Image (cartoon, rainbow, N blue to C red):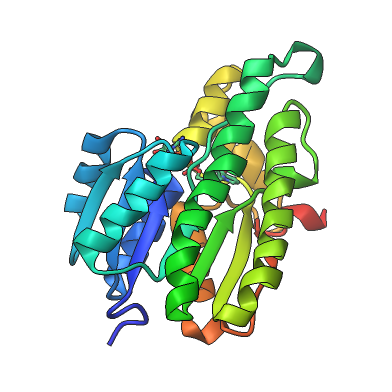
Length: 251
Ligand code: NAI
């Protein structure tokens, strides 16, 4: 008996990193899983490695029509939709005075328009069946981070979006929560190491040293929380953002 038996979960940006760990956790706990990512073959490859029924779909979540078509395809191929994790994300870091309009728009579009598009497409099924679970990926950067004006604004926007979903969708049996991870060891943070001219090892060690638990996070740390928030055990929790950061925001 798994917590997600008979459930269909959609995870965006799930070809790798945190999204893949979340997709894996749902699949291990009984869900059929749709792996959505920009590149269809990467999404299909990730889906084929999951236990149980899974499908890989190529989509840009910021394309509203594409997001709707992807959700329709999930319903047609997996028989429904019960869980949505808006995880797809990018960074385009720069100090404000050097940040281009393109990099501002790209980050806003993927995180905010993407979450809007996917959630709008999924909510009609959720409301109709009076059941749905949504988890959105925010970040500790929502609280402000040098070089991330675009990303920080988007990630705090995700928290406001999540609170509003909690208010609007709660009466229809839908829970919406956000996770704000601290430093998680993935391709995204490895790319940042490269950009600032540090080795991945040194960059991770510095990040570990900045929080009380003295280690970096791993995608599985976030997957465990996503699974809890999307489970029926958490049905009295909605509109919240949980910081999963080894205590980094305490110090
Ligand atoms: P990652 O870069 O390893 O993976 C992101 C995935 O999203 C990639 O597979 C990428 O192809 C996909 N993606 C990007 N744009 C997309 C789009 N428009 N449509 C569909 N898929 C798209 O990143 P990671 O580290 O796994 O991050 C996942 C989420 O967690 C992101 O929202 C990120 O902002 C957030 N996060 C990550 C932290 C970290 O330390 N790694 C910390 C806080 C938040």
